[in-house]
Length: 127
Image 1: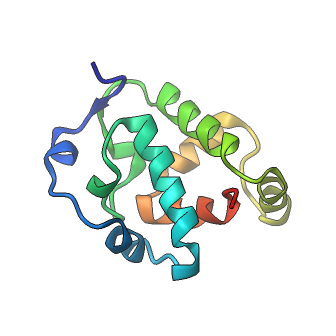
Image 2: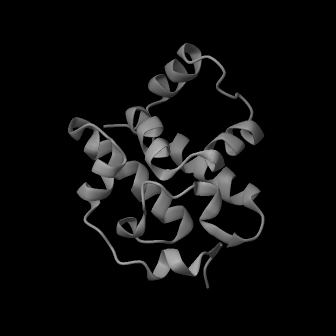
């Protein structure tokens, strides 16, 4: 049984090659490895194969219904576990207006499309 109620159209969508998805995320080719890692983390949280994602899909629209709070907390937890701690701290230190609390960070993440989400978090991943 799935942990979250995922939109059925996301699950039934035809898969695409991961590099095509990363290109549509407007990710530089040298960041494809870390971008792939971000999508794998998202995939592990939501239970959707990585190749089913669409760069323009809003994260807040992945669930068909239910509480987004545990979903966003799990994404934040998994991203922080697999990120370079110094890069994570530098990003928050050097980027104005980034939220410091989990609720606001969760709101920011849920407002991102998968392309922006991947571009934002891929530089923070451990190599």
